[in-house]
Image (cartoon, rainbow, N blue to C red; front, top):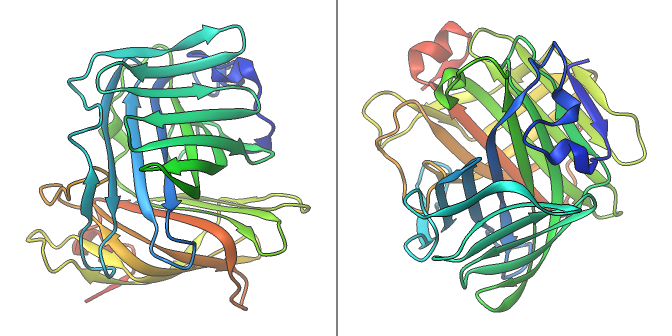
Length: 330
């Protein structure tokens, strides 16, 4: 099976994870270390803010915090960037920093990410200081036809402070692995439609939906609700109307709402707030890329989450590519 749901163990956090030390995953070596999520400084009924720390094993690619746009066709408003470590910052690379913890960080500007078997801690300059409570299981994605990447995704709940004030939130950390004997770049896989939805229902049950589609109609869909068996399928259908972004000249598109069908499940996404790139400032120069945040639910009857995150990102989604897939574009 391409996806497993299981409790994370310390040995899997190494640069050569025991989980991917096999022929299928090419004895994977660590390629990317990503931490991201949403924070709710003003209550979960308000617009969340987004943070990203995107890393190579021995360097930072970028980090930023932003307020998403006011609607799904608009871009973000930067909150923190210059005060955070960026790609030129000297980084203490990802490694085992003591007997039972892995980490990555920098001294100036200060950042510190620490990963234990049962929790983590995130610190960024004077922006945030977060305690990270793992969901009971992590998602282990083995290499398959859709991405050829191996990946651990650990969904988590956040508590702590943002700009010195109490905050709560939700997000993921991800460790991505590529085959040991191959040289691959991130952009080798940059043609996809991706949705990662997490939340805690009002009855306390944790919930995850993850959909990955490449532009050749190959896909994987995953769903888990606490107390139930996980569902995995390679038969995924997407319903959405795509709209050309008004500020892009290359016919890059985005959808507001979408429905995914797989394994008897029906995942609804309701788009609300747009952004362009994961950095604090909008990256208008990135052709073919679009992103949107919003709310979500499973099934035909809407419900609310106590806390939630949606990370919907698309690459190479220009109108002609989407029309070849059978989507309507306007």
